[in-house]
Image (cartoon, rainbow over all chains, first blue to last red; front, top):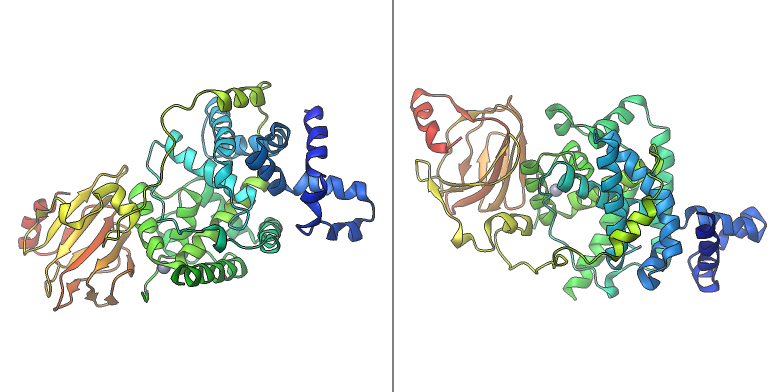
Length: 217
Length: 215
Ligand SMILES: [Zn+2]
């Protein structure tokens, strides 16, 4: 694993990867360049996945694997699957991450969100053996994608979301637990969730509006 | 398209989380295909899923887990990659076309009385998803619900005592609602209805009709 990380370090700290996407901002905050490198290694899953997408970079994939595979396995086990089925499914999900990397669009979702949707769909498909009806996809073309700055905002949104969950009142945390790891009751399905997602929803709504506008041109 | 009746937040959360039974997922996906508000909400709840994974408990992997995954990656893929076929413009939103085909004309209807026709979709679980064709001006029998009932309008409109529902609108009703949906007088209404338990009709006559609904 250690060799993996060293390779990743070289891969991620290449001059083009960092300076454009805003992470340089963190230099001021933390002072030393070394710290910045650590930040990138810890957090910039987008840069790593783009290395997988664009260069089939196995070291970058190894770093993503080390972070996400145990979490996917934990997620599946918490949903009630056995350790061996969860291990198998986690490997399957990560292989899908590799194979579908070309579909990853950092302006639409963070890596964690994208990985979650793959794990969710595999859980339904492989473990529950049901179909997963998906909405009609919108044709996000290259001209419709957001710029890098906006992609970074999406990643930061995800970070602040994680922080927000940690501070939620117990009843809302319980609702999230049930939604992701069990079934909501009919009454819960009909209710408002009261979760603090207003900001992120309106950001996405605006992006959809811009997209529709571009599609009409 | 102006949509006035949306999915509830709880439904969108469960859909994004992947814990909704297939028939409810189908109607959620169909509405989201037509409604950017609910699409934005579903995307936000998926971001919540990302945070749940990121923040959640890890489980120790098998020792050779990464090597095995690389082996999966380099193994020749079983089956062809899924090609997303562009959907034909249709009354039926894309997720419904996956169940029924693209053309409304090809739907295999069954008469269920009073001019109403239905086609039951094949979904897993205790819910039933059916496409309903209600002739203009016709009322569907007053019935109570055994559980959560969702109705999405695909063509035309219907009204009941809770309001009027046009194309793209979804009615979310539970067992406390007794309603008599009536299709608009000038156009047949086609909608997707998902019920969680047999409809129970109130009058004896309607009870006699119930077997025709095939539930
Ligand atoms: Zn909606």
